[in-house]
Image (tube, rainbow, N blue to C red; front, side, top):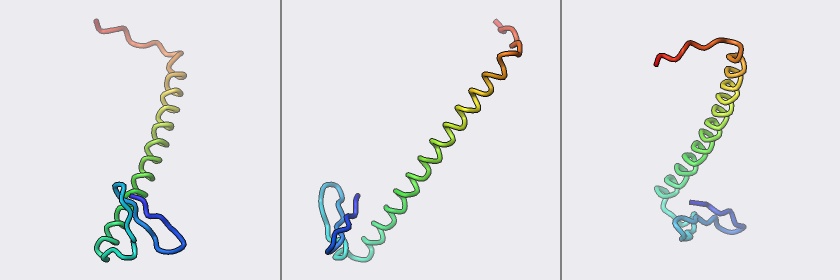
Length: 77
């Protein structure tokens, strides 16, 4: 779903078809706005997950480095 901003009327491209956004009923315009908000929220949360993953990786590297001088418990086998 991609609303296109042209100099004339905005166009909604959805599933390979194009629609005059201004000609759509208000109910459909609201659905388009809702999907745009959902898309933006998804991108934001995906970025947050990436930041968390990088932070976790950094902490794991620090933990690994600091555990080098500590003797682990023997295997329980």
